[in-house]
Image (tube, rainbow, N blue to C red; front, side, top):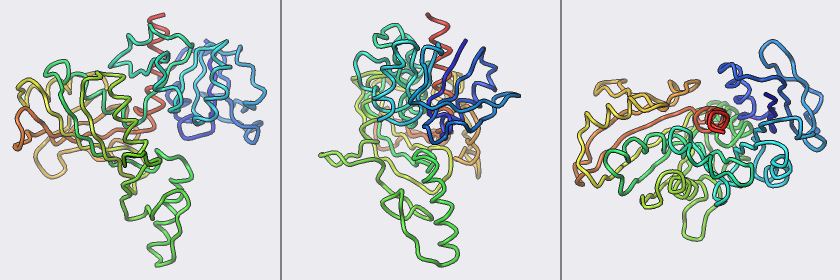
Length: 331
């Protein structure tokens, strides 16, 4: 199996390399691709060092599967070229809502891979990926009517420069020095910013609309959703507070049991100090963790819960590699 990774030097590209290595994915040749600026540098894979090749001149016919993790503009330009020779798994938002491109979380809708018409498979937004892996088993049991989502998203979701800015702003704040923001609309250190991506005409941000529209495409168009997405001063892992209304009655025991048995999920829900998972504990883990499961006493057939997941893994690299595994298994 010959594999290429476009955007290999970025946060997600490096994580894809890690996941491929940890899974011992069957690879004959691994091609690492980035901008001409990075060409010639090397990254480690297993015991070897692989030289970065320039995207502009890369021959996509060399790879059977190509992962794209270099942003929407790169995917728009190069993914269709790659798809003439290689199955493309794209981490950007560019193809997600294309009706001819399956949007896939393998634990939820691997059957969508049968409808691939452009040789491109889209990976969902990082916040969507951890959301639908929780909603799927609950929807199967109790039929979800509506979900209210509040996210608490780490700076790694915006890239390496925003992560560096958090570190720098934290240092400046502790030293009582002036802070200026380059990658955020407000100071991120010791703060929370209710604004991720551009605003839509109705007041939602694109990040919020991604969660709504992608969940409908992946899971069920009849589910009603609303979201508020917030950036917080955390390096890695996204957390979400969910309020889920069902059509059918439920028990907390059944919810906890079904989630703990669902592939990719783990319930950690003790009603005591520290009996829940936070972003720090989720970092580097493959699971989506679920805590604080409790009935909404204000509305019938409604539950509240908290979930947290490593956005670079479940939300991006791990899901992308699992898409590749599902594709190879089902082709």
